[in-house]
Amino acid sequence: KQKLSVDSNPKKIPKKRTTQFKTQRQNTLSFKDLAGITGRLLIAEDHPVNRMLLVNLLTKLGHQVTAVENGNQAVEEFAHSIPENPFDLILMDCQMPELDGYQATRIIRKKEQTLIEQDSHLSNENHQISLRPHLREHVPIIAITANA
Image 1 (cartoon, rainbow, N blue to C red):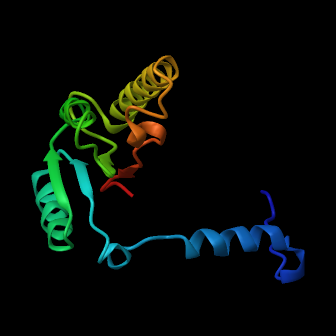
Image 2 (cartoon, rainbow, N blue to C red):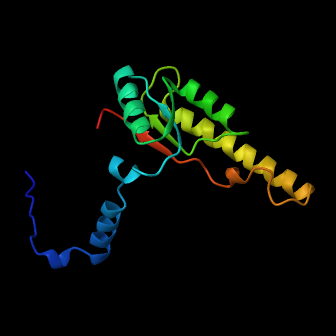
Image 3 (cartoon, rainbow, N blue to C red):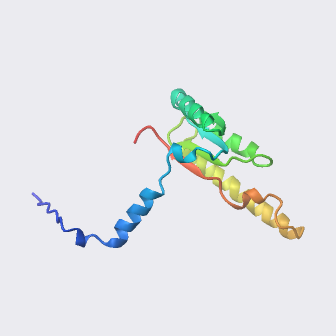
């Protein structure tokens, strides 16, 4: 048997760690924090009730929401949105049929990188700043799961 000892002296905890923990907690967003901020969102969620709940909640907060039920559809919607009307945020379920959220995110990131490189190359050739300025940063993708 191993003995587990717990030291209750708080001075032994490095201050750096507690500061990082507090910072992480303070930077946590809730749905209330999103009120008043609107954007174009893509939701990839295979469970119909969860998808409907997210769509209704985010629509009431003023967001323009596109919802799909698997990773393949998420990748397709992302690709179609890029030229004219890109998404501001993607909420991606981790476990979906056909293509899970992890695989879909990898594909989306590869597509983004390819488009950024093409844009950079074309901009340099034409001595322009950028043909697609919205492609300078990755679209935030937030992983969601019901299996916490």
